[in-house]
Amino acid sequence: MTPWQTFKDHISEYRLINGRLIFAGVFSALLFSAVMVRLVILQVYEHEHFEALSNRNRISIEPLPPQRGLIFDRNGVILAENVPTFSLEVVPEKVVDMEATLALLTTLLNLTEEDISRFRERLRQHRRFEEVTLRLRLTEDEVARFAVHRHRLPGVEVVGRLIRHYPQGHLFAHSVGYVGRINEREMQIINRQNYKGTLHIGKTGIEKQYEDLLHGTVGYRHVETNVQGRIVRELQSVPAESGQDLYLHLDINLQRAAAEALTDYNGSVVVLDPRNGGILAMVSKPDFDPNLFISGISNRDYAELRDSHDRPLYDRALRGRYPPGSTLKPFVGLAGLEMGVVNEQSRTFCPGWYSLPGHTHRYRCWRHQGHGQMNFSSAMAQSCDVYYYDLSNNLGIDRLHQFLDLFRFGQRTGIDIPGENTGLSPSREWKRAFHNEPWYPGETLISGIGQGFNQMTPIQLAHATAILAMRGMGMTPQVLRASRMPGSDRLQLRAALPEEPVPVVSSRNWEATVESMIEVVHGQRGTARQIGVDLPFEIAGKTGTAQVFSLGQDEEYDAETLDRRLHDHALFVAFAPADNPEIALAIIVENGGSGSSVAAPIARKLIDVHFGLQKEPEIEVDDIEQ
Image (cartoon, rainbow, N blue to C red; front, side, top):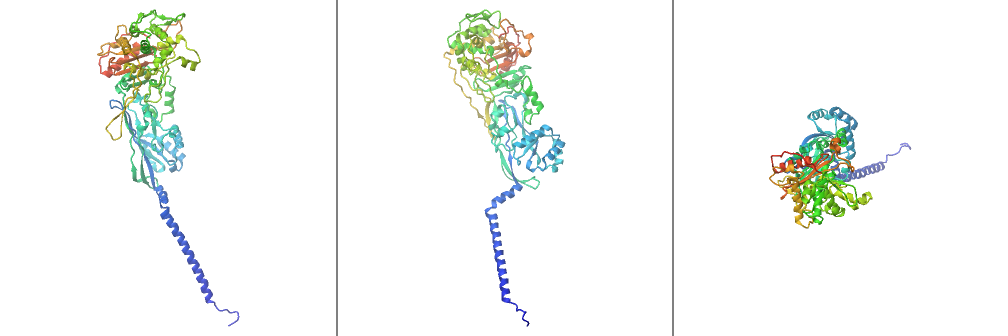
């Protein structure tokens, strides 16, 4: 053995190998332990979290929008219903290329720039995982074309929906109102959770006023989807709760008769039941088709309605402000009786004009040759202006305004439709506050015949007439009569809201005023005597004519030389039967000229319809009053 040869050290090698093996074993054990600990954490402690993440890829929660409640008239005729239709829905986060998708859909379905513009606006209002409606009311042909190209349009679906429809069209446009797409402002105030999947909300009329009752409660369903996002099966669901059905006081027969009776005139007719305040008819003409607004009215159609000189979108019944003219005289006369300024036998001579003491200005009567001696009843029947000039002058504007306030003139009635105007019952304080001018005695005279600053809405005039009919017992006007819960046959009636009675001291003053109004219709010289023929009961009424513009001292009104829009407004108020009122009404015919020849016959037609009277009288016009 040579010196440089070395013996093999088996013990050192054994120790080295064992050390490495032990290290590898310990390392493997630690690594395995770490893996097991992580598995325990994932499987036990974080199980629900990762299960939710997993399910999110294959399970989605879809809202089930509720069915909107139906609206009926008092006879059970449907005024607002829901009809099935197909809509095009887009889920933005599932769309790979939105611009390419919109371009293809435009080619397939002939989408307009307006459709695309509205869709982009809705995209800003919704989250990316929410469905956004691109187009409503798809035709069967459009649905078929979409189905052929469905595979090229991920994130786009055709969905069956119920959409609002108004079968009576124009007839109840202002009173029932309409629904429209939820806008950005409305999104900020509604309960977004309860409106998931809902596209529309009440915009005007009953649809807006009772949105909470009509809408219902949203439901949900858990569905399993495949990789393409298509539903494989339904896992769980919570059904939606439909909105309540509403039954109104409105009568379709009266509503149609009122609309037809106005013919080609603009104006308003309000008919109510004075016993409970129920609105039986409420017409504003011109009107419009509310169905135009449901799917989104086109810019052209909206501009046509908005820019029309006749303002069809304007609800004249609630917002139109008109001088009441001579229809105010029953209330002025009652004020005179109640305050002892006149009595039933008091007489005033009418030469055709009236002047204030110490003044030369003449305030003319509508009958230029005068009426002669007038007492309370004859002055009402023949609508003598001079009698009421003298009466209002003796009352004074302060007492007159105070008394008219009792009948809610110049105040909102509280009707259950949004947008009611206040009107105006002038006073000394009002003029000082708004015009910074004193009140003049001559203004009291013209206020006493319903001219000047007086501005009343048709609903205010009808409401005041109903209070007069019930001898001071008023009810807040209301359109809703009853509601019905989904799945129930029982109607929940809406109780009338009584108002503070008008504090008239003498019941005889009520009867004297009503009797004088009966003379208007049934008296030999009554201005509306033509409509009182062949009636089985008596009507109490009052004609009126309101000037559209003022005439100078020596100017004459000549309707034949004036544009129709400058003709006087024709008015009529009435209630029937006079001794046991069931119906009260106010009629305003814009530029109709005369309350006796234009407005009063409309009232007779409505009374015939309401009471089932078949024969209509021959109308002969002679005396025309103011």
